[in-house]
Image (cartoon, rainbow, N blue to C red):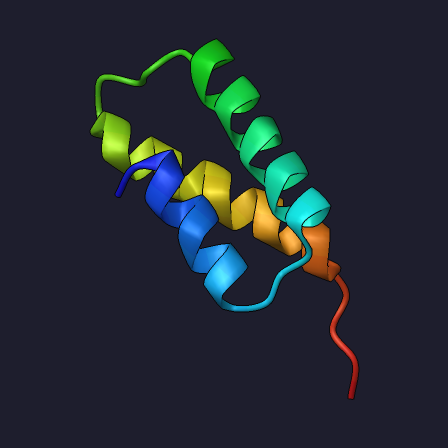
Length: 64
């Protein structure tokens, strides 16, 4: 999945434009600066970056 597709999916899900734009910018910044480990594929590493950013955006603590 390309970053453009992710941004469009966020916008279609009614995520605020500035939130989506900032999220994609942070993911791009981290993905460009990330050294690729030999044991994982680059795509897997991008998925981890997305997961980390979504967790940070939505809040890392669980509510009950």
